[in-house]
Length: 180
Image 1 (cartoon, rainbow, N blue to C red):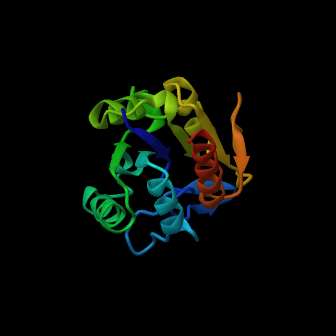
Image 2: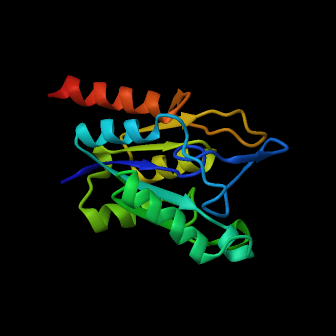
């Protein structure tokens, strides 16, 4: 079975738009900006033998703040130029109480079924408590929390606190090398 690194999108791959301490997703390709070191980090993960899978809540689709066309432009860029193997999205708002929205593990489980991934040998990287909780609920080997000190709930349970995707990629690569 394959191994993967599951990645939240906003705040992990691209810069979130932070307003009053709360992160928001860019709603167009014009506002979309990769974080430093992302492409190199994704290549490190690929070289270490991991699939890269984005699992992202995108409630702006259901509220009308973003169009499917603009989301598809962003995701085409990610799959074409950033070495992303699969993108799973939840387009629902929190108030919809859907089963795919993180912290529920459904997107991770579906991606694992789609690509033949062993979740217990895979990792989750996120910048919000719901990302870390989704990783725990799905059975990921380890979760990584990029802490931007947002004005919101912090994750609970075991996780590794890091500063960037670059730091995560180096740690995961070392873990993988030590096992060989």
